[in-house]
Length: 209
Ligand SMILES: C[S@@+](CC[C@H](N)C(=O)[O-])C[C@H]1O[C@@H](n2cnc3c(N)ncnc32)[C@H](O)[C@@H]1O
Image 1: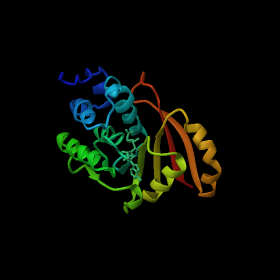
Image 2: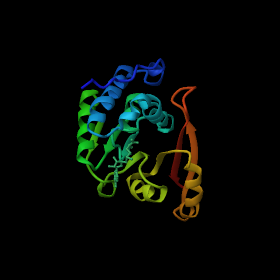
Image 3: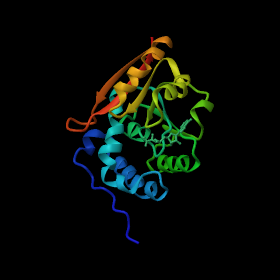
Image 4: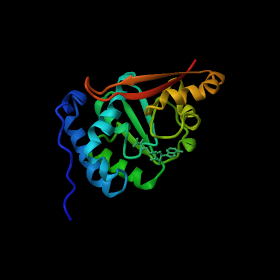
């Protein structure tokens, strides 16, 4: 059997991860090898790991205040939590993931990347986790109403939920608008990029008013 081919190191990796470029490369290697072998990443994703997954996730860093505690709900293989932690050494990040195989991958990745102490892994469903954080991130987790049911109880009163969404973000927001107003929540769609020429990442930011 041939070895999986890990994607080449992009020129922009130093710009996106100024203090952790080699660790970002190691993370992509882990995704392309163990991540694919364990079924966490589709083999067809290998060629687009950097752009579609890692840089797309890293872009959310622009919306996270300094020195805060973040929880990444339904982190899967660590997206966006691990790129966020690599880009922002000032953050403490909890990766919340209920499935055993994914949580095991996350624990191994955190150790291998030397992130122990600053990034921790909790194997639990959001609705069973009892802590609160300054920022709650999620990517490809659930439609907005369910996502908010899981994420808001984990959000400090003055904190924010940052939901990484695809192109449907504004439509989802429009559909949920009445519910959001009733719950006294303010929501907005924001576009962020990991570097100037990157595809934008669409984030729905929700805060209490
Ligand atoms: C589609 S995957 C997305 C994984 C990752 N965020 C990404 O963007 O690649 C959704 C993840 O949410 C997790 N999940 C599902 N229900 C959850 C819940 N109630 N609480 C926390 N995580 C949950 C799943 O186990 C899965 O890993």
